[in-house]
Length: 405
Image (cartoon, rainbow, N blue to C red; front, top):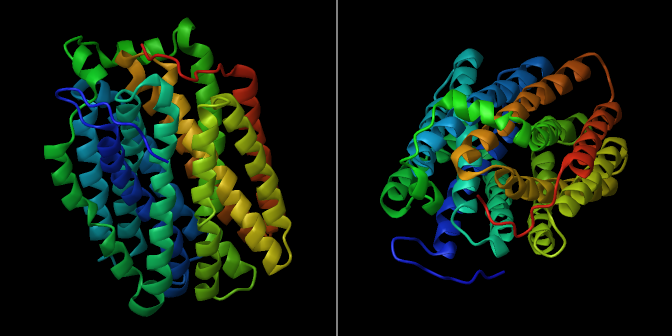
């Protein structure tokens, strides 16, 4: 899917911007994806309990919540580019150091800082891209940006399948430190958003921006975003961080589970591309509601699958719909606010969503320890996703090709 190039003096072409921001997104996804496989490996290596495995994912999400809130706010103060680079460096370096840990406590402390970098980078990158492309193709470009997440997960699945069984999880984590070098390249080659640059002299206090996000004018879209972000992140991290481990619990070997998850991960790419095609033709609300509903149905089917064919097919549909919905959500979120509070509003919504990411993995660990079946656990995620779909349907407004303030 090609994107036309209309380059102005002092700007960067959309294709180049998409490539630069997309590679950062890919590195983020690679780190989160590898963590899902590392958790399964640590279960065998360190003899972790289900609760301890859940806490690893939750500590990562606590860091993401803090990072999304703090870095989202400061993106409106110092610029999108600076925050994008800082967050990349933070998660890359912390992830590399975590490869040398020998205790669960040290590993989780470093995962908090990895999470901070990840949580801050994602909404800031989508805001930067949203402010740098024309309205007629903004949604499509951001969904294509989000499609790099699928590529990152695919790389993570390949690394985990070939590296972890033979060389161990430490080598896999070391490979996630590579983005630190890429961040230095970004400092030279990436301009800031033209909309932010035009308004950077308008100094506003952090408290003013936070209050305006919850002002009467923006209260309804803020409530809608907070609900959908919470339910999507809660279900995504609850399901996908546990996916390799769930496959092991269903009786497959660690290597087989990695292989099957790799197959499921391939379905993420068509999920993104179909969402990118539909989002400018039919609209954000349709894509979000449809793909979230598809995610809910797939989660229910996956939880109740009792054959390998049903597991792989339902898992593939889960990847297809869930990641397509993520792409639409990242396109939709920055469009709810004007430039002066866009980073704050998007970051706060993402931060609240990451609270869901704290509880999702913990809930799975707690319920598994209590003897609750996988079918019940995935039914809970199904219900949560449907709540998010209803929030968009009843509280959301269509923003297709709307000019940003």
